[in-house]
Image (cartoon, rainbow, N blue to C red; front, side, top):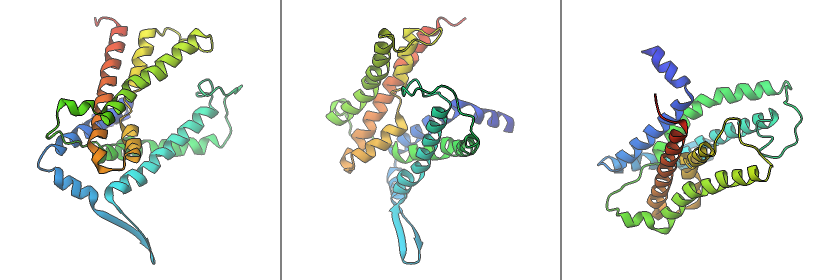
Length: 246
């Protein structure tokens, strides 16, 4: 049993599966009698002080402002490594002639690998549980077509298709880029659609953009709908591109 659990957490998809389960749990609990208790939990004030100096914030802000800072540190480390190793040179139009094997790569890699499991299996699930809960009580179909949820859902679903698939198609047609070997347009469409599953970052940016608590539910609804539409379209396209199952 222990080996099975260890093997699961070595999978790249394990972090995504854990994030999805955590978000689903948050949504489920938000529609039960436990919802007020969970809100009070994340509203508990926590303080860190040294002498007369003290930083006092609700638990939710410690998660969103504190833990997510570690997430962005990891993102920065990954970007730097990929640029140095030329993995982002084409996308950023950086004229690099070769990868870098400088000694400073090793500390960067060690820190990145040390942070990755903590971010993937602890910080992001905690963030999702704290922010994904949306109460569906009293909500109607018309609520999904109000400006905020409609704009967010459209931005995730249509925006990523236009931005990723559309721009890629233009670059390929103009001869500035080429399709990956063996890749098809349907596969590119599927991958582009999956880019709209921006669940964690969408919630993070959305909570910064809409600070008024009145927008909390429309924001979460838009992210949820946009991510689900993107996931469904991406799966359908990639499944179709893969052909029939033997």
